[in-house]
Length: 422
Image 1 (cartoon, helix red, strand yellow):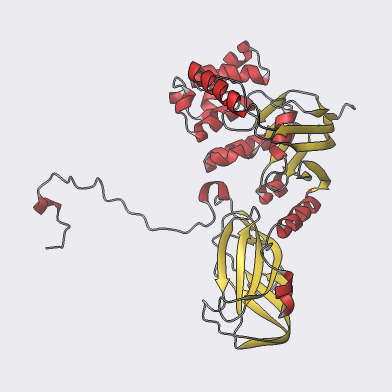
Image 2 (tube, one colour):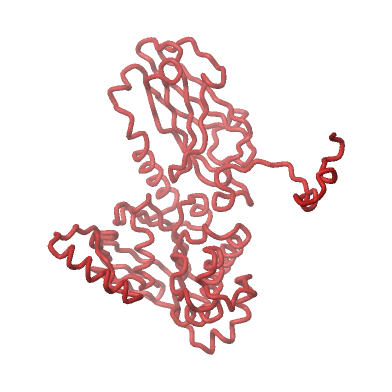
């Protein structure tokens, strides 16, 4: 292991047994219930096993920011848990050089019955800090967490956001050489997320190494020049981010439109889907509020009467966002035959900052049988404030007003009348 390599994984694998149950008992009732279930299930056959991670090998150098990406169930979180030694690998080994901080599942390393104050010391010791070091940094940790007034409350009463604040505050003050970040940050509010990401960037400037798991491909593209792509627990790509995101996008396309039977495509074919700015320039990164132009090219060997073109926008993690329909929008098309194209110009995009893809379907006669379907290209929407973790899918402005406290229902009915009414 050379001096500049800080993480080395060699044939790393983790196997789980399906249906396996832990043996920890919190009470006599739990122990008795376990004993009874053991008698009942003793004759049953094992339920099988699966590999959450298999044959993962790679090296990461000091100062690198590496994104860990893959579809749901690919083994991303298992990999981070194994590297952080929360999970023992079934095979292979991982070598870590330097002080490691990890922010993984909410509450990992915390004891529910202890207070926030006590858990700062507990979690700090788990991360490798001496008690004196935690004590010296305690005030800074408490201030960073922004939950000082709840530190003497047992953490079992904390929200998931409070867990994350406290855990990240402790991990941040470890001054780690290596930081592992899972999607757990998604439960925090926007300002705290920004604070955490700003801290991660400051670590990068100091030469620390960061492994970042996220489904937000825009964040991955912004933070990580390199990605490790996992598919069904195996490393299938390790290299430049743009290439890895292209592979992610292709896999995402294969996981969609599986309901579409190829035999249905005999009536027509979608030959191309292109994205442009409002003025017709090819574009894949749009600002919030900008209009999107979509051009759908088709080939119809025989006439399709009254076709309905539908354009679906999905987030790259498969969340359905919106649907445009030529029929529903009153854009009646009498028929299509031969080669041609249809264009859609959206209103200003209200999608929050994230990566999305386009799916096109042509239906016969309004919403009847499908004659063609195709997954199109992906695009980014960018905005500094409006992101998926805080604002969901869309952000629309609302009108706000403040009229003071509501009327007391016990008051005189005549006094509760709204001014100007009788």
